[in-house]
Image (tube, rainbow, N blue to C red; front, side, top):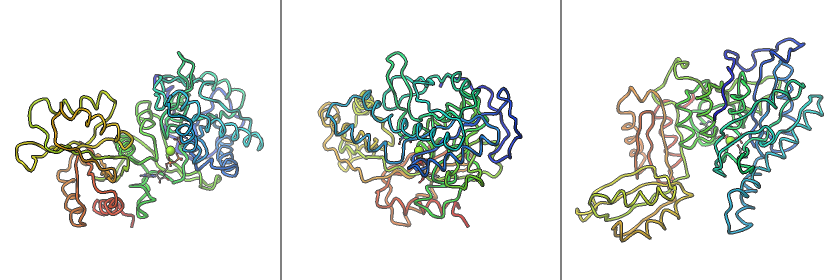
Amino acid sequence: MGAPCLGARVGVAPGAGPRRPPFDPETMARLVMKFGGTSVANLERIRNVAQHVKREVAAGYQVAVVVSAMSGKTNELVEWVNDASKIYDPREYDAVVASGEQVTSGLLALALSEIGIPARSWQGWQIPVETDDAHGSARIEKIDGARLAASFARGEVAVIAGFQGIHSASGRITTLGRGGSDTSAVAVAAAIGAERCDIYTDVDGVYTTDPRIVPRARRMDRIAFEEMLEMASLGAKVLQVRSVEVAMVHKVKTFVRSSFDDPNAPQPGTLICDEEDILEQQVVTGIAFSRDEAQITLRRVADRPGVAANIFGPLAEANINVDMIIQVVSDDAKTTDLTFTVGNADYVRAKTILEKNQTDIGFLSLHGATDVVKVSAIGVGMRSHAGVAALAFRALADKGINIRAITTSEIKFSVLIDAEYTELAVRTLHTLYGLDKA
Ligand code: ADP
Ligand code: ASP
Ligand code: MG
């Protein structure tokens, strides 16, 4: 994102108390409030959102609201695109799936006007939110805050359709990838120099793991950017990965909060912040899991130079990301077996490419599995503690859970296991690292 952070004001937490009117538009602080799908699921929920916005307007903020589509809507639109034609045109995919956010932005603007708060809706192209042309997962390149600023000066709340932008050169609508409204919100906050970006969702903050899987998960008051980045990229979909990157780079003070709180007694939620701003740091701070994995094993691969390049080269050319890789000696002791993972969505394509290249690569057989899950533990404390992962291997073995593959890096490790053990593994690690709430 190229937009400058116009000196986000720091130091004010949610609920810091109202300023006193009359407010001077020249000096008013700005706020971005983002509401996800469940928070705008129907008209009643949209009216509830309007009450949250009303509170912040009364507190003296110029408010930009970023909304998602109603929950389930984007999935429905994606299905329609898939059913409509065998031709996959990502530009038309974007034209269709961006429409969910257009609806909620208009409805919320109406709900605000109805309770006496001047508001107007904004589509990505109207601001404009300029992106590259990677339709379906476009990156924001620039947001011009001038029109929004003029709207604030007129005393309006800006209700922005999240998830969407425009590729200026072609003039076509783009979308930012699933969960992309989070990124819209943080990027708008950077562009307008907002004091904070509040991401309202259906949980009251970031938890030590998905609270829907582990009831004993604990809400964190704070989590470091690096940890949130890993949590998000390893499967915790509470924030889109790119939103955390943008918040980190542009120093946007970002909170995750609940829209289900009483609009008149909101809780602060979880602050995503610098590592240095967290006093009590645990070794492991969170457990994430991703069901979006598939495993491929090539048996009896010739053990000679260039084989890895022959396997992974064509996959890379086809834009297929390979994640965990392990190589072991085959049962004939002369060749090797190679196991690796790819995203579920790329599984069939990856298999086809490898089978096509079987003679070049030189392997005996290909075995695949999609009923696998990647479970990861994350914590900046791992940098200075040895043996953290080894504890997990023992604990999982004690529960009879077989580990198919392992990867480690500075502040996380991941294990690939059978999907049927997901909950058991997540709970086991959560308890092992002392994360259960008392
Ligand atoms: P929204 O529609 O508001 O964007 P999402 O469904 O994208 O909401 O994200 C919120 C969900 O993320 C929660 O309902 C929760 O189940 C899930 N989640 C996964 N991991 C975590 C975590 N570590 N902390 C909080 N929520 C999490
Ligand atoms: N509506 C989009 C999705 O479901 C974007 C978002 O909600 O953040 O992925
Ligand atoms: Mg989301």
